Amino acid sequence: MLEAGIKGQHTIIVEKENTAAVMKSGTLAVFATPAMIALIEETAWKSVADELEEGCVTVGTSLNVKHLAASPVGMKVTCNTTLVEVDKRRLVFSVEVEDETGKVGEGTHERFIVQAEKFQNKADAKLNG
Picture (cartoon, rainbow, N blue to C red):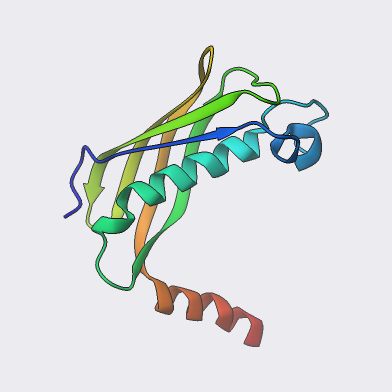
């Protein structure tokens, strides 16, 4: 049962592959904003996945986040999510990202519950005009 209060947490290590220079969001060897976004989305969807009806998944629809500080290669980065609102199929998460020295990101993330097969078929149909 999906109810506000569900929490998620996921930790990764900043590696060359998820730096701004490699992800083309900048030129520096620091944790890229797109990598932070991916970490937020992964943490959020995984936190509620076991609570969904059979055949359902969530898809990201909105992000409003600030990337507050840089994290160098080799540093641990942890994302914490809290489901703060459930409105039918719409889920709203409060998110916070921190490295070993403190907060590096914060904001909100919205996801929608969809039927996986129906959603995928609709997307694939775009290829057929």
